[in-house]
Length: 303
Image (cartoon, rainbow, N blue to C red; front, top):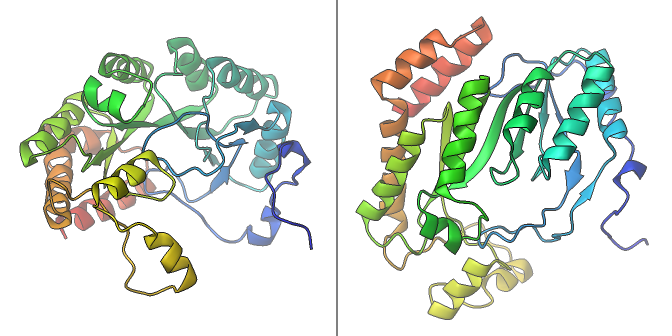
């Protein structure tokens, strides 16, 4: 039996055989069509965010030639959109530009988006991405103060975040801001609301509000154990005796999970039910597919 191991040379892996699922339509609530393919161009992440549970931090990347070969294969199968689902697609501006160069050299036309970091974004790399078909970028913003960003080791500042989102607006690249509430430094409901207000002022095209989850082998998890907020060995006990009532912990030193859930709902409504946002969304619809998905999301928000 071959022991499990992390693969260093990702180009050795074959492409997924999408021909066996060619009749199944995949889509994203934030996409343009129901012909969406997902591709991973790298594995691992070298950054050390205190909440992240990526187990193997070493960053390994596929060659750009391999990545674009897979894109071409997807386009031949009828896919029209590609979502790059790496933990960190824009590891450097140079890698993004190299990818764009190869897409343009082959004259490929398709919509694509990726998940990335603001501290590795440059205006030139975003400009090139837009020219090569990039439609949207999802950035992990997480929180709205320099103190908070330093606490979670995001390696960026609110000034850089504002700058990158400004560039995206100028280049007409849609943005998603991934955000979290319930960090240890948010000691009151007003602290949480203050951080939510930062995101509202940032005004991305879409926002996702999550409640901090404490996963094992993360800095915040270990801090919670030291404070007695989580019972030591909880996950080991679950692994030995799985039970259906197992729950992932949140940081409840200052605010309860119930209070954080209410603040999360409040954040979603405060963000998406703004009159200016609704009008912008209506006039930004470009297809019947977009209309359907946005209508479903709007109904779900009210529910």
